[in-house]
Length: 353
Image 1 (tube, helix red, strand yellow):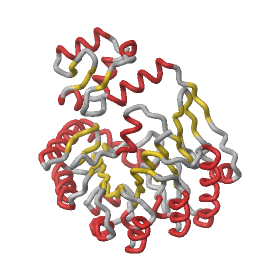
Image 2 (cartoon, one colour):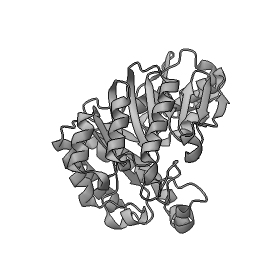
Image 3 (cartoon, rainbow, N blue to C red):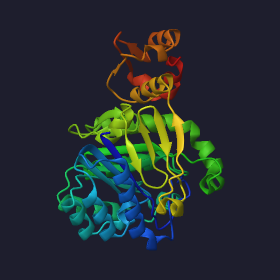
Image 4 (cartoon, one colour):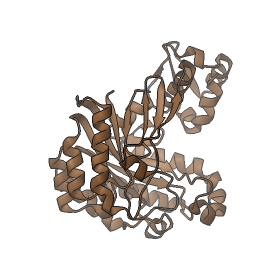
C-alpha cells in the first residue's frame, strides 16, 4: 500500500450540492476524532513510508489547528502530502504550521471568483479570501498549489467562466482542477436549482471545451479529464487512483481498495469514534478490476498499457471508435484522441466489453 487517504469531515456548514461525509456542529469532537484516526491507522498500517497522503473532507483546515498538527506529525513519511483547504480558514499561522509539519501540496477550494455564484454554491469565502489564502501559502514556502474550480453553476455565463479561468491563471497555481457541477438527485441544491441545471445541461460540452482550450493555451497540460498541471506537477495521489493502484482510506466514510476487496467505513461519526467501522465490503473479481482499470486509465492523456486488459474490451466497439477518430489502438496500448477525450465516458462505454 503506497497511497493513504485521511478523511476529516468537519465543516462549519454543509453546502447544498455536497454529498461527501461531513459533520457540522461537532467542533467539540475534533480531538476525539483525531484519536480515532490514529487508532485506525495503527490497526491498518505498519508505519512504513508511503508515496502519497491526501487529507480530504469536509474541510480539513477547519479542524482545530492543534489537532490537525497532531495528526500530521503522526502520519508516515510521504513524498507528496496534500491537504485540502477552504480559503476562509487560511491564516498566516495555519499556512506556516502546515509547511513546518511537512505538508508540501495544498488544494485550495476556490470554485468560482464570482461573488453571486459563490452565494449560489453556499460558499463562505469571497474572491478576496481566495487570493489572500493563495498568497499566504506562497509566503509560507509552498511551491505546489492547486486550485479547484467548478463550472456549470446555475446562472453562470460563458463570460463568467472565462473570468474565473483568467483569475485562476493569473494566480499561477501549479495545478488546476476544473469540475462540472454535479448535484445529486434529492439534494436541496437540486430541488432549488433543478430547472436551471436542466436548462444549462446542453451548454456543458461547450463549457468543457472552453476550459480545456483556455488552460492548455495558458501552458497547462490536460493530463486527466478534469485536471491540468504545469511543470510535471500532476496530483500524484489521484494519479494512483486513475492507475488502479491500491490505497488505504481511514476515517468516517473513507473508502479503501486493497487487492480484491473494496471497503467503506461507516458514515456515522459516533460509531467511528467507538472504533466500530461497520465496513461495507465489496469483493472485486478480475473482470471488475480490469474494467475499472480501463475506465480510469482512459481519463489520462497517456496511452493505457493493455497487458492483461484485452478481455475487458469489445473489439468491434474499439474498431468503431478508432474508425470515427475517437480512439487509437496501438496494439499493446490504447488511448483516446483529443475528440474522444471530450466525449469521455460515452467512448469508453463503447470500447468496453
